[in-house]
Amino acid sequence: MNNNLLFTIVIPTYNRGKLIIDTLETVLNQSYRNFEIIVVDNASAEDCSYLKAKYPEIKLIKSDRNLGFAGGNNLGLQHAGGEYLLLLNSDTELTEDSISLAYLEFQKQPNIGFLGCRMTYPDGRIQYTARRFRSIRWELLDLFRFIPIAHGYEASSREMLGKYFKHDLSLDCDWLNGAFLFFERRLLSHFPDGKLDDRFFMYAEDQLWCEQARESGLRNYFFADTTIVHVNSGSSSVRRQLQNRQVMFRHELAIVRRRKGVGLYYGLFVLLFGFKEYTRNAIKWMVYQLTGRLIR
Image 1 (cartoon, rainbow, N blue to C red):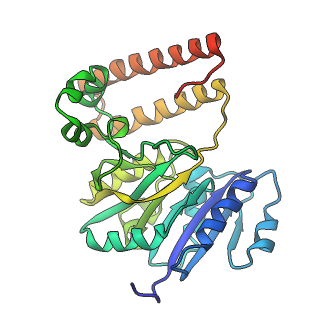
Image 2 (image 1 turned 30 degrees about the vertical axis):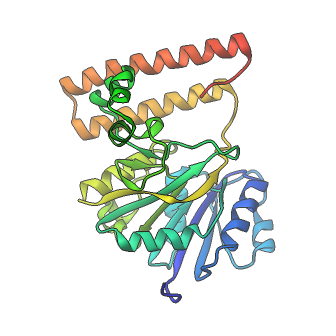
């Protein structure tokens, strides 16, 4: 590995407290050290200047307003000097030499847009990192899930990914979780205005970016041989979860509309996806009311 190669790690943060400390500690423990760390303070209520005092090697960029996930990353990328870039959430922990392993795998694979990696929750449960785009076919197979399951694990996992996939194989996918996205700087030339599309303030930006990479003829690649912990520290309030799902629902519809246009296909998809989402949220709310327990 070329030790003169500079990487840039961009970490947007908003009121993360100790979580970003844990993130920075694991980044600084990487064996490959020729990287710059750019932390974007997305107008946090807390004073983030302590980060610069504790870690003088980082670049701390303060935004006067919350730019959202995409906008915060774009602000950081404006100051990035690396040839290879890593977008990293401020509630992640790198458990091994994830950066160098991601780079080495990136070099082996032709025509990669984004590379993502295996993620777990702190308790070891798998997060669904490698995903397929939503479609009528996917929604129907998910609704009648005994059909893909009957085809055996390997066939169904490659077809469906997400919750059907143990995340134990490296493979191409449609989109990747944005908590860890590794890519080459020149990828940005494929995006409007040479920056990440920021039409969404929060949620589904990673889907949109991966779709745009695929439209440019590039692959999105899930790398199973390195694992990070993603705390995924959003609000645990069931009301907040349901509100966030509504935002995600609207954004995912917008992505399908972008891919398929407005017509019969889109209308049928809205009916099917809407039925599934509202049924799911109603069940989640009822379980919470009866048991006080949140279900994912």
